Amino acid sequence: MTTISNILSKALAVGAVAFALSGPAHAQNIGVGVGLGGIDAGLGVSLGGDNGIDVGAGASIGGDNGVNAGAGATVGGSSGVDAGLGASVGGDSGINAGAGATVGGESGVDVGAGATIGGDSGVNAGVGASIGDGIDVGIGIGIGGGGSAGPGPGPGPGPGPGPGPGPGPGPGPGPGPGPAPVAPGIEGGEVATAQRRCVEIVANPAAYDSDLVSLCLAVQATR
Image (cartoon, rainbow, N blue to C red; front, top):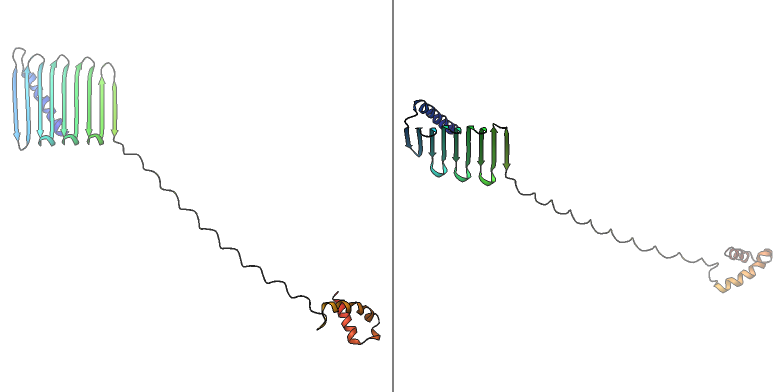
């Protein structure tokens, strides 16, 4: 942009000098061209004419993918001063900028500037201003947005482990042994008979043997 501004400044300066040297009855045409090492620059001045002074300057550096700049100015026309400036750097994917100014028109001063950086996916910016009947200022910036966010993480882990171990061991051993016999060698039926006779023996122990009395006491204890 510094090189482009220098070109525009020189073009306007040449136009001002040419305007001072010009007369109403005659016109002058001046053309200058320079070509060096891939840089092409052209400057043209027209003095007189219907609208006064027309000045145009253009520069091309590096071919299609290099830097292209152009500047033009018109002084003395019906609308006063018209100036235009444009630059293209880096081809389609590089930087494109344009600026224009009109001074003295119906609405006063109209200025517009726009820039495109990086193509469709880059940054687009535009600025415009109008001074005269009113002041209108607009600024817009657009930055290429990315894609939508992906889905969240998957589901959590599976369920916990299976149930615990099986039930405990089986029941304990069976019931204990039956009651001990009253006396060795006495069967169940004999015990019933002995219990009936023991009533008399225990009631009159002196008439019976002591061992028999003891046996009857044991039999009665088991009832």
